[in-house]
Length: 356
Image (cartoon, rainbow, N blue to C red; front, top):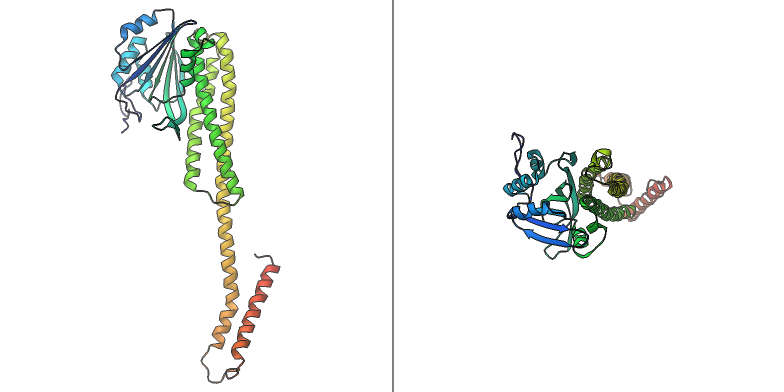
């Protein structure tokens, strides 16, 4: 059950998300160009070690998984020097994406989008929109996420295995790598959506009726993607500005400009897919209406054909003693032949008028 912040004063630290983890997991990467140390903790029981790492000359990535243990989040935030309002925003998952440039750190809130995994580690197909907070200091990056699934596996592999630019660069490059991973997974999700939209479009062209619940689900996911993606553009504009020079070097800003191009591409795809889904919905409704019109046209034609036949049946079925042809042995054959000729004549007339 979600908790709400309605009618609560500022700086009320309450987790409002859907993932009540039992324990908060904290992953710590300490690295430089030659070495990398990794450790995991399940609570804020490493204050002295973290303080020592923060005072060292190594770059640090602290990844906090699980936000419902607010006492742990508060303790960690105080240890890192975060403001009470920043700690409040970290656990308030409805907070809009934003960037704040404060004196001791750069604080960013984004939405992380990815496909969920089943118990075997395979992608289940469900799209997850997760609240993500990123804190950048001189030599450290601290990320706060709601659950253990994320988009950072490739970054972890690069830190553990490689000796490339990520390990030899500063914390600002790690900050860039995290944002780049978020945008890359947005493109991956949109690629899957594009394939699904193409399949729906092909079904429409083949006059196959679509299940509206599937179409509505896809449209909802696109709207959620739009809400997640739209703030990225403004955030990257600020990151490339002069105010962030204290935290982000000019070399890293070159890479951030490349991410800006990807974000523009993502925004264009979201707008395009939204329009395509709306067109598919309209085409589906139009096809359904056309099919209904065809059915009604056929029923109307049959009704029109049987109007004179019903008249003849009613006329010759009247119970009079003296009736022409009543005693004739050819009465029924003549009646059936006349009815058949009327039937054929009306069919040919409707066909000539192109009514069906």
